[in-house]
Each structure stands twice: as structure tokens, then as C-alpha cells.
Amino acid sequence: MRRSLILIIVLAALLAFGFIYYALDPSQSGLFPRCTFLSLTGYKCPGCGSQRAIHALLHGDIVGAFRYNALLLISIPWIALCLYAESRRTRNPRLYLRLNAPLLIWLFLAMVLLWWLLRNIFNW
Image (cartoon, rainbow, N blue to C red; front, side, top):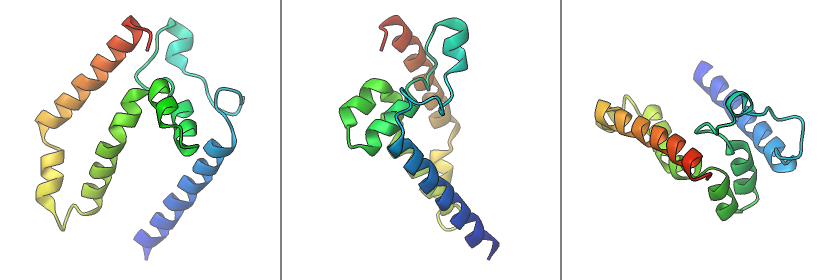
């Protein structure tokens, strides 16, 4: 019962945020927060452009989403797989353990750091 209630609340929140990101353009609305790291340093963080990328994805603009934040777009299948593995953690512990292996976590961290560096060098 408790798990069902949590699932309903999470789905309702996702739908609400999805509607907000669909209806409002983060690049034009004052409702969305600006990147603090970018404001303070002038450099893009790994997540810069994610809000605009989500807006573009919800409108079917995959190329635009990729231009805003390629790492987010590339990470979506990985995130979905990790969420699936988490939801099936007791039924399929091997999948969960493989996805949470230290090597994969370090590789993902290296990918994020490389993205952070390259996007500032080449202004992506």
C-alpha cells in the first residue's frame, strides 16, 4: 500500500513537471532557475542546458536537445536501465550489481568530467 502511494505521488510529480517543461520554455521563462556555476564562473557545468534539452525533447526536437546537452540525451537510456534495475533489485540482483559495479560508476564519472571539460574548451 505504501509503495503504491509513493509510486502514484512520483508519477503525479513527473506528469506535473513534464507539463510545466512542455508548456514553458526554460530559455524564456523566469520560473526556471539559472545555473549558479555558470553565473559565478562563466563556465558551463555538465548539466547546463538540461532544462532546455528536456523542453526540446518533449516537443520532439531531438537534434535541438542534443545541442543543448548531449550528455543528458546520451544518458537517458542508461538512467532508464538503472531505474529498471533498481525497481527489480530483489528479483534480478545480478543486473543491479552489474550496473552498480565500481568500474561502471568510475567510467560514468570520467565521461561526465570529460564532457564538462570538452564543452568548455570547444564551447558546446
